[in-house]
Length: 429
Image (cartoon, rainbow, N blue to C red):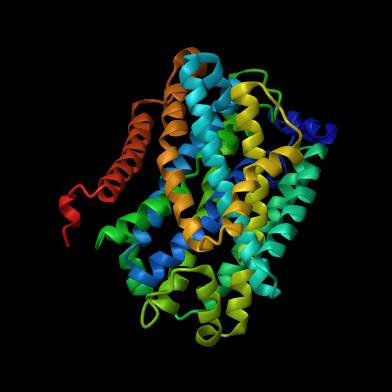
């Protein structure tokens, strides 16, 4: 991504020198986590959250909370890596890992980027098609044009893109605030679901893995390190410490908003569909069922948030794909070509007549299986003292990150065992 204006750079330098203080000074550092947070509110989340709420009520809310806490930790580590080293995760992997492993990591990351874009692109197109009664292909065409139009702003530097993405995130957040106010939520059940781990059956496990795959995103881990790597001219470790403090606060706030949006999605689906409409598993069905249950306003708000989610996350996914290719291979292709490559699978899925929501859920499972690649690479590099110096993660943080990675890897293993028919004891019921 291009750099910042002279005015923004001057402002950041003044903050680092201690000449500017207050909220406006802090806002100069805001942006990277807001852009990364879009990955945690993409249409793949809609598909898995609707299935979770409709099928299991509030019982899988704890998975959403757990996934969000893991996401906060790994996004904070990714931002730290970029700030301290001035390099992004893909570049560090290329420079420090064996060549065959680098090629494998790039291939897995590209597949994950395509799976990501499939979910994001389809989501925006489904929202447009339903809201304006258009054929799905037309919705996809409009999504392609709008996302490319927003990507053109990338050439003008960080700030315009951050403001556009921030505005779309605000739309998603306000839509779900409205949904929670409209839907009759059982707050006691929701509280119990957040705090009580429960996996009723194998189908719940598949959805749980999908939720983690839709929440902790491979491309967001790569992207965050790239968004922070050259944001400020850091003179010494004191500057790095100051920027890290700003970054950590932004990560917690931005991902807390994303987490609340996901929790609200599950609660809305649980409230509207779980009693009497447990079969609702598709975005289209959810929209048509919401109208008689909660009214046209609730259904329209749902689609508005879906369109904002699809467009913003598709833009961010393309940015991440560009960064991944450039970091691993030292190749930069024109943004229109990158956009075309990543959206081809989505057009192919629709042309083949595949169920769109099912394709969304499958894409999230693919992402969950691809996720260990950047997670483990990030853990490896953030613990290296020769790269990170005094900012290398300590034992406690490393232990928490390893635990988070173990949860994801463990869920993936159990899912694959279930897919291949191997017995999983605690899912016997």
